[in-house]
Length: 357
Image 1 (cartoon, one colour):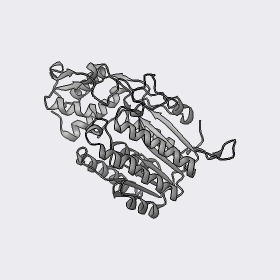
Image 2 (tube, one colour):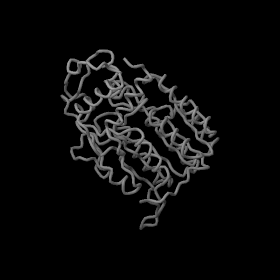
Image 3 (tube, helix red, strand yellow):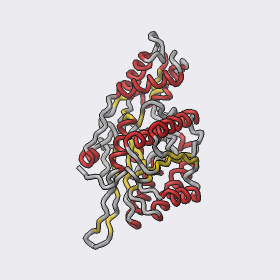
Image 4 (spheres, one colour):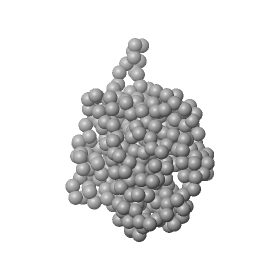
């Protein structure tokens, strides 16, 4: 197991995408368990999905910061605004940067590609440049299981070639990894990319399947299950993702020279997934059962009448399955929240937030 070489206590930390699903939970974890000299959250709060959820997440962070008397600052800005990013780094001199801000979603990238170029490419470039000029100790950034694209070999390993993206979103995430590698090599910036696998949980993204299914079922609409229900996904509960991120934050890849005397890039990539893909039909069955339990749906709800099996969608893949052996070996951690437990927490949150039936 790797030793910690980055101390979070007493350090200035930046979390981009702080109003997002993972970003909010990460900020709450840092406020609860650590004493950063400054914790700064950045988000542009786009209307890609309901901004009320984003404001609710920010309110939770602020409440926690106030109750624990910790330093928390929120900055509304866009990653593509280079002047704003440079100014932020100049003011706070961040030791650790966690870049979670990105335009998410596979299907949206087919209809709105410009959003992905601006946020995921130009925005990430601005972060890399700011890290380069401010001697950041560790840059941790979000990649995605989408980079595995049409790979047939499972489970997906970070040693696999990932040259076959099937969506622009996936292509931008692979580009992030390449850009980070170049900056690590050229400027000795320690960076770690994290390939997240289908993150779910309370106050998640409404564009994700489990959330969208819930909205439709509650409204009495029919849900479409792609690839005729034969898809498998490595669903990963958000608390497991955050635990993995925090552990990774505390070990930056070592700076060292190769046999030629030149610096080797201090660069790593890890999968964070549940290492246990679930069949989509089984997932939907558990979700429905938990929605009934939480009284989001009535006990006599006719599930069969509200689901339709349909072909695969463009940009989708039939299976995602994470090889997490490197994460286990280096950090002694493997996500382990059972699917039913995670979906139960989501259903209970949904009942509180939107009201039970």
